[in-house]
Image (cartoon, rainbow, N blue to C red):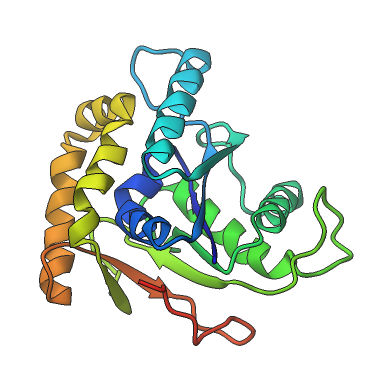
Length: 234
């Protein structure tokens, strides 16, 4: 299967679903990780141009841990507008390039505007990518993929419809997350959060709910035309 995971910034995917991606990759599925924004404004001292290069390198290093493809759409932080048709076309072309069976992205009620914009754009793109009269660099997709929303971190308003046991992949998840050293510093300074500890705690919490040591929670987008019988092959 082809799996496309789309986050707003470098490190979002590692925080919320890297254990599942590691498990899928180990089982032989093709993984594409995409961050829409460059992560160029998330630092107090490093200027955007320099930070873009750092974050791009960190994202590539994180993806290399599991041998996944890593892409960036190149939007500036805070500059992603969901209502823009131009932006929709960029996301449509991403879906057509990856040709996914399953797409994972932010929950619609996530905590910050870039995350919510990505959620909306991915929802639009996964359907419109199948319509041939939308012209992009890649041909129309042949099916609407399954769409899954990853944890919004706080658990507020997010009740997983199913869980993936990532107990055997938690160390890989944390290894991927630790590649984002500039992000770890930013989250500590801006939000007073030790994100590695935070992610470990959330994994334990979801694990308690799922009946295992560590888990990641997801909500499947269940609507007509989606392959609603599809479940993660994990």
